[in-house]
Image 1 (cartoon, one colour):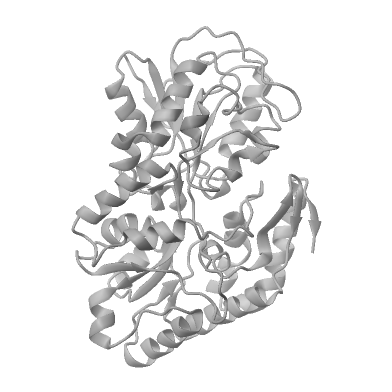
Image 2 (cartoon, one colour):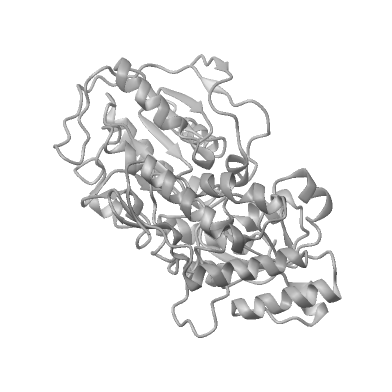
Length: 455
């Protein structure tokens, strides 16, 4: 197959790179020449039945971010008879809405829809079903026996009125990453509560200035701390209903914890992917709450932390809280176009990309949402020789503890935080003082997307 490459789409962002495992070098995104995939009317919608367009076959057009490019290329290698046009784009990183913008254009021109799309966002079904873009998967396209293999609750963001409209790629449950030899050398116990975590931060500031117990410099900061701490800032109570409360005790005490650690300089305000962090702080991390992909992508890939140092422990919990909770940073979803003229081939690729051990179990940087592949992935991590101790049990337990009170609205919480909170934090404001502004911004974003908001 002859492939033409050209620069397209939204610029690669930190979120694209941070979940990439850096499988593709930085630089311009590349686009394989695409074939229009049908000009029919399609019919995927939550109100009416699904009526496929005429199935004419032809080339399979797949959109992926730079990380999932490895999956598409491997599938092409293993299935040389399948004609594929592979497009790389930003993966809707940081809620860029690039995919929705392009789908809106395709809906107007009645052509151009890709057959299969990967998105780094977990909320695409909130608009893709309404816009008639994504096909129902549990109505005959993918066997129920296959769909039963996903981790409990993993596909909840993809389910609308009982119909499944996308597949979760990976889970990004948060854990507490820490430097095991350094903790032992300094005589610190791994904290089990947020109060103990905060106390260690104070000790580090006094006894080992310059070292860090976390980072609040990335747009996914609320997903690490506020989500895990059960802050009710992002409660999706219905298809177009949300409740926003940033003044509750779970929000204010986490904000206070962050403020104290930022003030004593044990909580960084630099992005873990910034050159500043890489130069000045990457070798000063004692602890860092973060998602499951931090181990390989951040510590091993970006920070180049030596082997046998990094270990994983459960996320701290508030003292007295008996229900363990974690946050979630990323995960991503795969969507199959309702306009595809090649549904059989599209469904085959979609199934392979989300379940195959060859990719999900052995190559994917993140913890697979498909449970059998997750077992293979965990075995790969355990046998890598990189970690200090076995991280398998910690990650498995955390996968079942993602707090359900943080929803998947159409608006991006990362975009809200990055626009509203991050700039003011770097200017010297406190998280506590910014809670009202954060709430107002969430409310405005939600209402702009048609949500009825309760405060």
